[in-house]
Length: 424
Image (cartoon, rainbow, N blue to C red):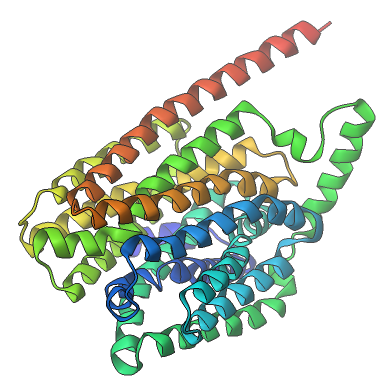
């Protein structure tokens, strides 16, 4: 473990470490807020008399608004810079979670989840634009892995934090306290101009755009309308369907299928995130060393699906549930830095924010579909289908990766042929 930590952190100069730390912590808040509601769904189901499908709608609204706003936010990041947009988004997200804890009405909660979704839309475009601008090429895979590691830490901490605060003061106070923490950290980000500035890359992008316009080439968002980006968008949809199934309804399904207590089921989900956090670190190391990122990602997906399928068979002992959740989380997370490096490679300089805005909109599409779909499955009395659907989505992601690879190879061959024809 000490060797792995040294291999990941030591190569970063001091300035890059601070940038990675600040951005990664903001990303942890983003992921944390995604999971502040699911751990207490059973309590809301009883106290407010809401169906699980209605509770899933809160997450679907959050994801849908995030998806609609990510491309505009990515374009805004590429125009004005990531720091201010990142701080604004985190403040909006935290304030919305705080207000959800205050209001008595379900429909008011839905409205504040719209606000939370708008705030959440900034994280991927702003984070990746800042990291791409301030971290050297030979270290960017590991920077992305540290960023993703922090996100998994956010997911890992959310269930126990929400449960502890709920036991001490109730779920409403828990949401208000946790929302306030995000607002406070947003204030800190505003003061960190030197560590979060991406102005040099945006300046180079403006020069490049001017040159392209003079040559009659595509510029702006049109530059990103390529088959590779389209294939990556579809890939993000598929993996979001799989990932959000675990986050949203694995606790409910584990309670129903394996007779676990609410606490034990939430701890199994926490174990999933602990393993996933470790998997992202390995994935970052791999991403900086392999060439065929699609093949490595597909292998990790196949292994994850193999450990998810048995969770759908009822009556497993607690130790078996924990083992399967840990292994499934580890292997699905190994793929995450590889995935993000593929997007960075496909994005022209100065368009990273917009590129990640486009492909991570696919995340939001998947996140919007999965909670309502799986909530409906649970309401119909089929919790096993939660895990089997997750495994099916993961396997579908492997086929999508094959499409990404095929499109990339075709584009590369076309580029070589075009270069050959234009040679004197």
